[in-house]
Length: 284
Image (cartoon, rainbow, N blue to C red; front, side, top):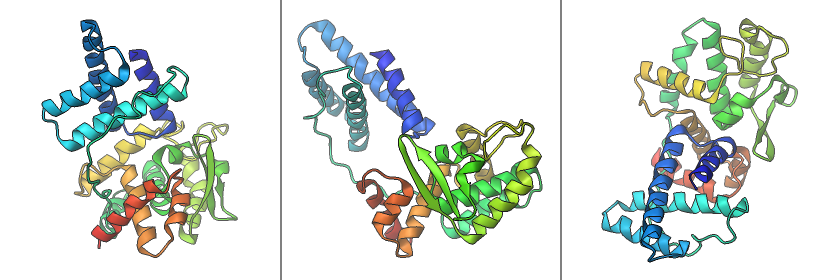
């Protein structure tokens, strides 16, 4: 089953755009769960997986984990066994009747407009090709709410400067996200000039390149933002996903319908978008 955990984590990386911290949490939770199941099965007392899961939940309560931690571990188990069921590796999902403790969700962390300007000022004050690229990436991310995996996966042909929109793919879904005149001008100048300073092979289709002329990676951009945030005196927890959160909150705060924000973000379920309503109220 440990190989199944590896397959599940690979699925989360490629299809769900989970951060490294999230993947580590999933691995720790599932490793703990599997170790418990193996130990209990070795005793030969409890046999069915659903009974083992209920017993595991009781064990978590006995260890006095917080409700949030317990809920996360239950969510990890649910996601894993759903993956196992959907991929045909098990015939029934044993977590269907597993009850998770109620936890009040905290609104997502967002950057205020002044904090974003402080972050943007770091690369904007530099003249290197990498810094000019970073300005465009930050501006595009803040203006469209793309996932970081979508951002670094963009090719030159995904930018439509006539319609002022970006074509992006996430898993099996595709969508168009519009951007304003300012972003259009940034991208137009970037494509005509600054991108060429990092381009060594004209066959490379990637929009954003690293200093070697290859596609910039998701991990590379995370580190770039972390460094700028540190220099700007912002929290070290500033990530590309926080810019996505900030985009969503800004849209809702300016009167954009939640259904439209859902479409722009590419959320499959509107429940994922509703959490931003809390962030909008708390950010005033």
